[in-house]
Length: 280
Image (cartoon, rainbow, N blue to C red; front, side, top):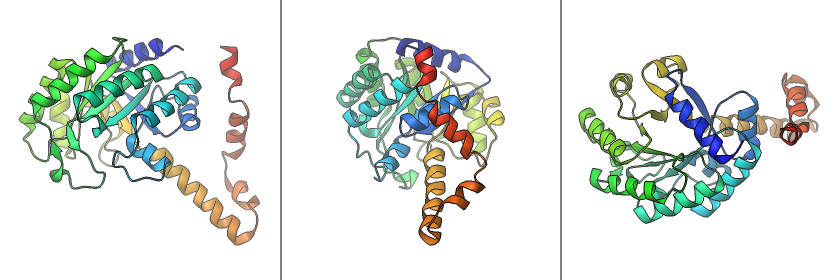
């Protein structure tokens, strides 16, 4: 599937009220696993990829590093990749550069936020939020920078801890009017999700509050794509840590793998990697 076809597929997903879960991935291996497990899209999560580099999620990776990872994932998969631009794109010129690099690398969508600095783990009320007019100019710059009009631009609003729900709505409407193809919003209250989802100005692509809503409930409230940023790397790290501790203590890993019901299936899947794509 070409980059253009992946972007067209993502736009179909955004128009489908049934909704799609886009798991967060760090690299080509996990992205291919997401695809082969039947998901329609993947999300190159900023939080997840920072974990992959053993770094705190503080925008420490460059756009060039992220673009390289996008290219690796795009070559290994046939599903749309939603790329987290984070607040590294706090200035229009930075966002413009990111759009050009990420589009060329194969991204189907780029999401960026209105927080000026987003330090993972910081209290939400401490976030510095850009004025709406500044974000609007960023979005217009991103629209002008893309070469393929099918590339999806997603503008995320993080202002709820500091602003009323009506102010958040006004921001989302302004972002959509400026050219954002989809919008996202950071919320914690289920009632806020319901109110925002009732009449959004553009398709909603947002972190899924798994502990509060099932996927079907989330989509019923009007959201199109549910993002799960770091579930995969956390699960993988947990499994690998268990193996390493057992190997260190017992001197073998036979018992560990004997307990893993999916080990044979995973081994078979890995051996077949690349073969199916060559036959397409």
